[in-house]
Image (cartoon, rainbow, N blue to C red; front, side):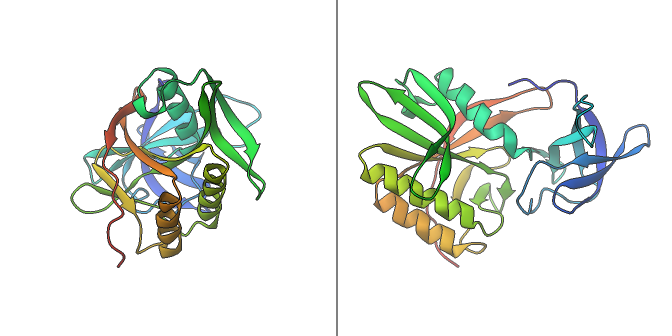
Length: 238
């Protein structure tokens, strides 16, 4: 997945969840759309280098969208969670995710489950069980390369885990795939300190047969693509 030319600036502040004020290299201050519903903990520090996309659309209220941020002056993270599904879909189609190979059809946003959900990706092949994939974007870096999810309490995330347990009970594959869009993260664990209910539900889901995978994103200001598989561990609750 290639980026169009991005505009570099410095983050002034993120506010009201979906807004960010940024000073561009020429000194102009603009308000950009922030496409991230999470807390963006450690990814929204004022003064950080950021990169914006000029969406070039008269239908958009804001002409710029925030895409990337430099974390701790050395790592790059993609905060646009809307890119995660398309990136994983591309990675599956290109054979970058070996554990999800062999499926001929990839569908997006299909209704499923008993709680009125929509699955991020559905893989089908006549000779294989259907594979339901929920994609979660990971950008919260802790100590020694540890990435954790979620970065805020997520009732919606727990709902998705329950739905995945349901498809496993019905004889299908249920997969939770962590899209690790942060170049400093080397392994992934649940964020027990932020949302222990989610972490405990994830333990329950794995015991019920839900598969968990974490994949690094090879990321630059020019492009992003699915990289190597990363270790996932449950860690210990705080």
